[in-house]
Amino acid sequence: MKTLTILGSTGSIGRQTLDVVSHAEGRLKIHALVAEKSVQLMEEQARLYRPEVVVMMEETAARELRGRLRDLPIRVDQGMEGIINSVIAQQVDTVVTALSGRVGLEPTLAAIDAGKTIALANKETLVAGGDLVMSSARKVNCKILPVDSEHSAIFQCLEESSETIEKIILTASGGPFFGWNKEKLATVTLEKALCHPNWDMGAKITIDSSTMMNKGLEVIEAHYLFNMEYDGIEVLIHPQSVIHSMVEYHDGSVLAQLGRPDMRLPIQYALSYPTRWKNPFERLNLRGKTLTFHEPDLDAFPALALAYHVGRRGGTLPAVMNAANEIAVSAFLHEQVSYLGIQEIVEKVCSEHHVLDNMDLGSILDADTWARRRAEELISIFQDHKFDI
Image (cartoon, rainbow, N blue to C red):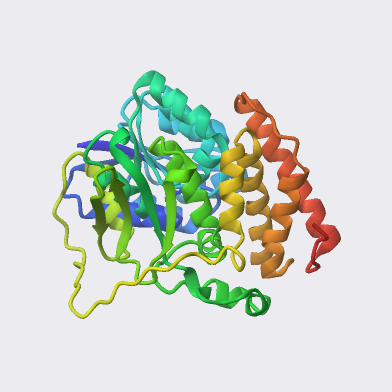
């Protein structure tokens, strides 16, 4: 039996992780559930899965939850200290990092230092602090198992050492606006952007998918997870979302991983690794399927090109891009900026940043804080206007 702490249990990945736990036939046990502020859903999860600990990031949410769970022997903690305690607990084997955004970096580092296996669903952790995270993992021989469908696919296709790989091919659905030009993208509404054609995801990642920033973040994540230079990471648009990614070897052989667009599959593989568990989930049916592939349109979706540039430059710049994007997407979700304004804000913040190399956690957090503040300033000044960049 493996004992889990799930960071972000009330989010999309967290809920699907708990569904995997429900079908694991007693092979998975919950030590702790962590969320930001969704008190009602956390109460429901706590009553169903009976963890030893639940942690709410917000103090008022923790206080309310304590009252709701006073009839159960479940400890309710609060804030970053509570989160870190939940991941380093002696009985925990695996930490599922499904918190949205940079906030997952510190508990992931704490879990690595404590020797836990990481089931990584929070790509922003590697984007913001990839060098630090991977060097910390190497020091303690920590396993980092990818949960993103694309990176799980690559992981499953790796037969041999990375030296035998020619390139990694990340597939992208293209989101709801595949084939649109910039003029048409200027008409995008929040409602349209939240309608992904294939995947059921949280709001932030759905918007990132539509702008292709999500794929850009995944390129940076792949660079760190698989020790692959950026010239060896290719992105192809694959609207059917059947092939989740591919690996091309030096001899020309290409291995691909296929499956339904169901995040429970890569989640379960990360939790069952190195074995595979039977489950009742719907199977892939290829009868009558046509699979197509296209080059990404970097003019209409410049976020992907920006991510390649930022990843190659490295230092604190990836943390800045990620932070600015989080603020810009949040502003779009609150209808404070236009859809195209997201990219303009991120590009502007990145262009103003003085990049630092040889970072530690403090410099990463400082760069993150600066980028958030600068993005918020730009949003307040230039709401729904184009920047002169």
